[in-house]
Image (cartoon, rainbow, N blue to C red; front, side, top):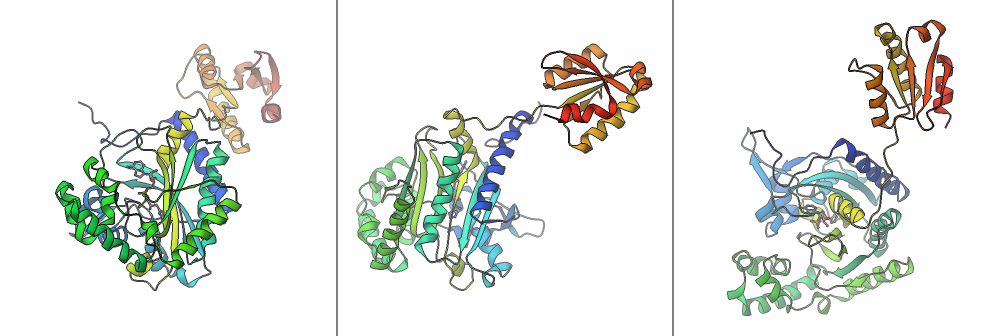
Length: 418
Ligand code: HAM
């Protein structure tokens, strides 16, 4: 039996890759407007980074990481996300010493051992942004507005923005105690993982995927009843800025996010159009992360969106990304003598910037014409012995089937002059 790709992975086929490029370009241009700079990071890191960064009571770290020992017995993990990595990049390269805020974006593949379903893969792609050094609520609003602008540029509709505040370590302490008391009353019904979380990190129970835990979590105390004055003020300002920028949102106190580093503002963009995995984008503040990774205190925030979910959303809403431009001209050699000249001409026109295809199969002229038609070539140039002698080609315009003898030197201006 032939080997197939692992479960939860995807191939991007030649007909699909242009849409990816178009989306990536869109993102790149948008980040440029918002003045976010691209970072590129390794696919794997020391496991410790994610344990410390993402948190070892999270589903991601407890159940989903692709972790292995390398040949020197070091524990290595394929990145499940980009935030801890971006923080590591900032620290390791001393970028906290440069102009702040440091504003980054990335387009990365991520790896999580989850149960594959529509919109949930084991290898998936994220577009993410991270901002380091900005304490001000204006930064929260800017980051959210970036995601919002991308969605609106793409013409996406019906996306709900839900926001919440998870407070700071001070107010979280009181909230954690309240959660602990609440979940202790229901301990017998919690899943085994959550029983373990009760002592260490009861907020994770709110995020558990088990239906029984979900039911219990629905009645848990709300963080918004516990946040301190400073966190409340921050949250109010973020909401005010969003309103001012015309970005609608709903406050949803049940959003806790699945990763441990979050403080204060958290948010998700959710769609009902793509099934159960409707969270297209998630993010928030993580003011303690850099310190947790060994740096001096430095606030941070960002988001990541799942590119495959974004594609599902575009598809479900019938939004077309631009199609791949057609081949400009197919050069058909007629007979062995013409092949060399056609090769020269092909390279010349390609260097001038045309999309050019030619025969690599030794096909008959009839078969070449059929192939050029399949490619959707705008023109076909036929070059045989006669044409060679005269320094011309027979140039056929495929749109109206008209054909004309054209000097080789004029091909570029005829075909390129669209
Ligand atoms: P996350 O919520 O774990 O956050 O993932 C962000 C997005 O990645 C999700 O909203 C979803 O669209 C996509 N995603 C996650 N898991 C999968 C999967 N198995 N298959 C397909 N898509 C998936 C983070 O990763 C944080 N690092 C976001 C962040 C950046 N927070 C602050 N800065």
